[in-house]
Amino acid sequence: MAAQLIHVVRHGHAGDPSAWTLDDDLRPLSERGIGQAERLVGVLAVPRPAGVYSSPSLRCLATVLPLARYLSLPLMTLPELYEGGGAEALIDRLAAERSPVVACTHGDVLADLLSLLLGRGIALPSLRTEKGSTWTLEVSDGAISSARYASAP
Image 1 (tube, helix red, strand yellow):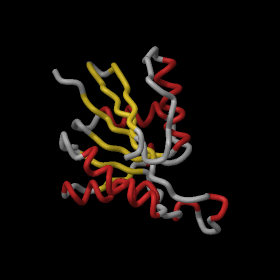
Image 2: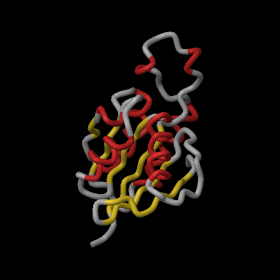
Image 3: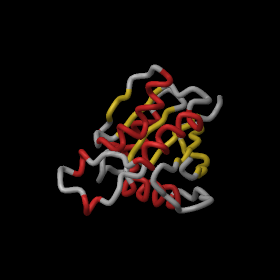
């Protein structure tokens, strides 16, 4: 059986949060972030994802919306991807989906994910979680077997 792929994307660049005066969930992508989102299509469209998921925050939705549109897939929100969510819940939820999947989340969730992977003895090539970057997890027989990092496109 082939390994399941879970692509976990950190939302694109969304400017300085301290300069945003409205609800942080409504903070949009910056021009730089919009470019990252558009370039992610070329990076994540092959092999074709079975599903595209996002945190309910606008900056996450906007990061993977171009991919969902390009693939004519619905963009579904998951509470497990929201800020403050835990990596364990994220993995449990996404591992139950058809492969591959793309999921957009926040820096704190990615940091928790990396900590979880290290705790499970998974060798990581980096500890980076830059905006617009992707961590691809391979899941074999229900367990994460490897993780690789790709910088923001």
